[in-house]
Amino acid sequence: MDGVAQWFLWLHQAHGANFTIFYDAFDSARFLRGIGTTIRLAVVSIVASILVGILGAWLQSHPSRTVRWPVTTYIQFFRNTPPLVQMYFFYFALGPALGTALGSSTPPLGNFAWAVIALSFYGAAFNIEIFRAGLEAVPRATLEAAESMGLSPRQVFLHVVFPLALRFSLPALTSNVINLAKTTSLAYAIAVPETLFVANQIWSDSINVLEMMVSLLIVYNLMVGVIVAAAHWLERRLRMPGYIQ
Image (cartoon, rainbow, N blue to C red; front, side):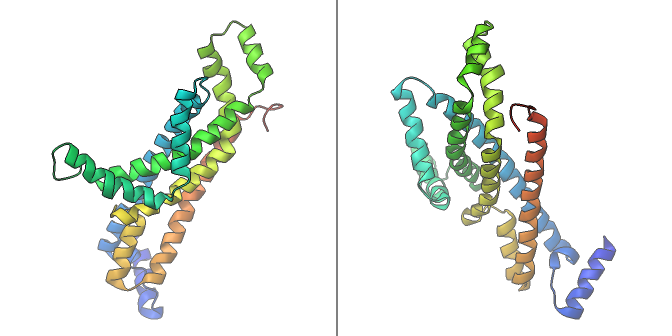
């Protein structure tokens, strides 16, 4: 690593390309912490959005309008408003309001938690529709065959409907997961110390905007590349030859 640091230091001195994150220990440490925060934010938000999406899709299939109406309202609200506005709403409006309701002068949750909540609800609004479409794509004949084998409604859903719906949903789900991972950069707006926030601090200190923007683009491309590779691996693992290609 010393050789890499020395090379980037030489690059700066000889050509002016100031990639401080490779030769300055302080900048390197805080940039890595920012990447770690971005990864944690993305993982937690993605998992939460998928779980809420599955629950919402199941509720949407309920025969009662009373059950379906709140889910539809939730979907329309979060799909039709910008995610940055939603994040501001949770952090600057709902957070202080909850603190006041609880008799506290400070919000009950920090900026990272509110970012997770905002991103999770935003991503889940799309995931509900993705999973709903997957559930509706399961052929009726398959359900009838499962029921004729004596499986209970719960067993039909867990062992037949949901596994098939997941396979149908994977391409659209992958796109939404990628979008959600990139949207984590909006947490910058409420001072979550993720990659963009830390990069801004570094280029403000070192006046190396171009170098840090290049580094940011590389980091986000690598993160999305990992997600795409994982999704392709999962698609191959769940593939059913002759049924779902």
